[in-house]
Image (cartoon, rainbow, N blue to C red; front, side):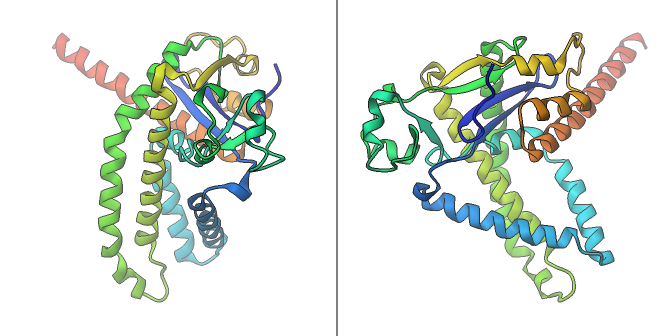
Length: 293
């Protein structure tokens, strides 16, 4: 099967275990000139922050090396589910593909849109929902659509309150770090970190909002598509607790032309899943031992 277009919007579900998945939304809008203002501001802010982080990470000063090491350890503890949610764009900023019979509605907005339009422009152009093509969700053959839908629903219900509370706490904590800014040598790391976490929590909440939209009307905005390339990467993997391996991650990244940051997110998801399963096993063993005693 032809690989998904990297410049379109699609969702992909990658099995971590027999019951858990890493779900990622690829979203690279073609219509940057017509992107909502908030998207343009966010992109600019992220680029500035990335340059600042890269400068800090490349510094040879002992204090900066320690700061980077400490920060990376903290980032590694962030649940992989958050990365999944953050990959879903703001509902108004996402792009949608429309049917051919409605292409004439897009021409006044963007002649070279190739049938893609921002969600924020759909009402302005009077495009009915029936003319929006469902967003493809690519998955392995072993994953049933109902199973993936259940997991997406859990993503929403299990994480909304956590990210809402996290955003509030970060917003309260940022002003408390201002005294660190008075220290001339050391950057205000706590303040920067809390600001970053506030941004992440808000992005996750926007992702949840997008999920709500995709799951409404019996998930009519989603079209499930089996992608053989995923199954090929797993090969003849037997039904084990953990299906994903570092080798499979490398194969998936190559076969599906995934971005480097997705590889990092998958690696983190694998490490966290292993640790979680180990804890669950130890807990079961302890409970079994209590019954024996």
